Image (cartoon, rainbow, N blue to C red):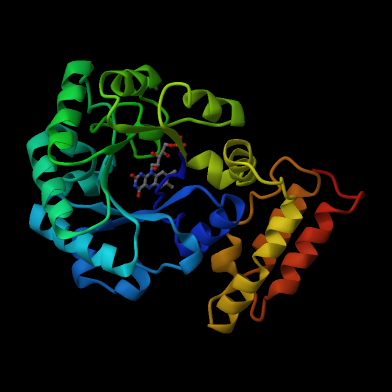
Amino acid sequence: MLSVAPMMDWTDTHCRVFHRTLAPHARLYTEMVHANAVIHGDRTRLLALDPVEHPVALQLGGSEPELLAQAARIGAEHGFDEINLNCGCPSDRVQAGRFGACLMREPALVADSVAAMIAACDVPVTVKCRLGVDDDHDFGRFLAFIDTVADAGCRMFVVHARNAWLQGLSPKENREVPPLRYDWAYALKRDRPGLQVIVNGGIATDDEATKHLDHVDGAMLGRAAYHDPYLLHRLDVAWFGGALRTRGELLRALRPYIEDQLARGVFLKHITRHLLGLFAGERGGRAFRQVLSEGAHKPGADWSLIEQALALTQSPAVAA
Ligand SMILES: Cc1cc2nc3c(=O)[nH]c(=O)nc-3n(C[C@H](O)[C@H](O)[C@H](O)COP(=O)(O)O)c2cc1C
């Protein structure tokens, strides 16, 4: 399985539609949405979902089984194909609310939440977690967390293969500083072959992603997929088949969606911000990014700006 990580402020519906164009077989994830927001908030915005996105998972934050169950039911009714519970986010805000990564220390509560969510909806309920928090370095403890949650009915775990350090590190540092231990995700799959294990964290190249498939059921890419989205296309073709399309072809395939969104009053900049990395490292890649960044917020900006940016990637005069 190829999947694109849930990323706050990044994996909104426009981003997911773009990623779907690149990777027809990938599983996509929303940004994390708190269960309370799903229940009481503006669902049209928070649960926005385009039909082309499937299969797509709604990631929930929270730690109250009843609220999570209600939110899971609403998410499934909205058409999401999977409901994922966040047990990996380390931010202060999340810790204050007693959810995210600190749930790794509360396996029974996670199990209750998962059981309630499974009872409330008819799509798979999955968990995204870390290896542990702070100075937990005990594989047995990690396995006990997984077993407790699996006993409640969760069959798929996305393992961001490092600890979360809840004191002293920002969320960004928590994606970089705690060391990666892919061997724990591999050992989980070996010891619990009946579970689906997806490995996540620090996967930056085609080869790295593909090598994980020798050990686990899939790879989830976050930052690399966002900053160099063509990587998703190459992986999708390599893993699932099909013809490799050029970056330009893929971009033009998005035109009907973009024009439809503009007609509905969406500003071009809300879509193009996700496209900036498409030509990363390619000839004209910087000019492409610059034209879109500088032009997309101007009144009346439309598809012609994208053609203008694209032309620069095809002009021999422009450097990478
Ligand atoms: C901008 C940003 C926002 C993120 N938001 C979430 C989130 O909402 N939920 C979540 O589980 N993880 C979130 N993450 C973590 C990613 O899902 C992923 O676990 C992490 O980036 C490691 O994978 P990578 O090295 O492939 O980026 C976020 C990461 C980034 C960079």
